[in-house]
Length: 421
Ligand SMILES: [Zn+2]
Image (cartoon, rainbow, N blue to C red; front, side):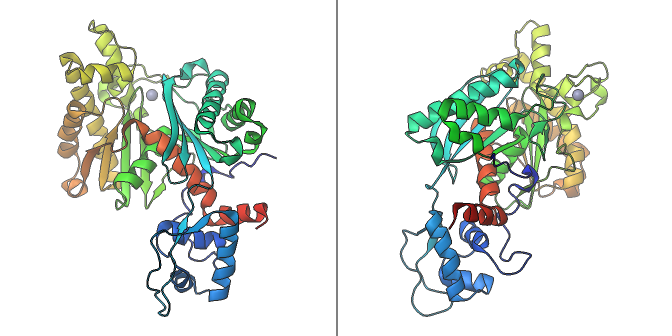
């Protein structure tokens, strides 16, 4: 039977909490969460955090050791909070399984085999055109994953899950994209089913039962960047400006998705400057129709500088092409105007600009309008920054979402039972 996550809405949520389960005592999954977060890493500290007896903590830890999920730390014994003998530190064994992760952009994709703490075991990038449709793209991705496993010398039985970031709005419960403007042919398609079949076809039948988590690329990027670069930011917003425009919002360590997974889709907010511009969603006046990498590419082409996509614009910007620089700054001003509203609503501590257009000209434009239009109180402690993880952010986020989903307390408990430990 295929083990599918109930909903991606829960992923990433449960990892941080859970000193106690709602139903009562802390379980093995809760102890694992405490160790992984670093809040309690010795038997004594776990007793103290959970109120469990020494014997009960021992029993639950034994389950985690038998599953291969925990190991004794390399650092040697530390003083116990309860006094007495120094305790051995415990740590999450990040080598007991691996994760397959991929980030699809409109014309380019990146895939990797990652450890459970996000270290790269093997990685590849290349051309994959989203417009070729899900059947072709996910089939090819299955082949990439099989090659990565082979290169790393790992079998598919070592994989605990698959994460995929896509450039469109994702429905939480089904992992399907809903009316994605820049993913023709993907609307409502069973991405999870096709991807696990493709991996099974190329890497072995065991892949058919792997959980697959699908999320929006800006969400995955925001999740990874917040954890990697701004762990103390309780309200974090990432705006990806590539072929389209999207935003990911991370509040208290969890992705904020809204009711239908549509939160952050700021590319289709109406702006007066776009009144005459037809957007790929079918409407006139969207921000993405005038300020995305795709829009800048079209304007460059019209001005005699051929550019097809956001990544072409990125190359022109890297070369300091004056027309591209001027248009990127203007696009930044349009996005900055919309971000003034975003910042007023959410009051984030960090606003990260990422994607093909994220460079000095675009950021200058964003800052010009943002600080002019937003209330000083909303921007007093706001940092406007660029990416730490760069082009790998979506990939790292897709992998991290899988791990947080699978090792969240409740899910971990269920998986331990399924393992018979
Ligand atoms: Zn639109």
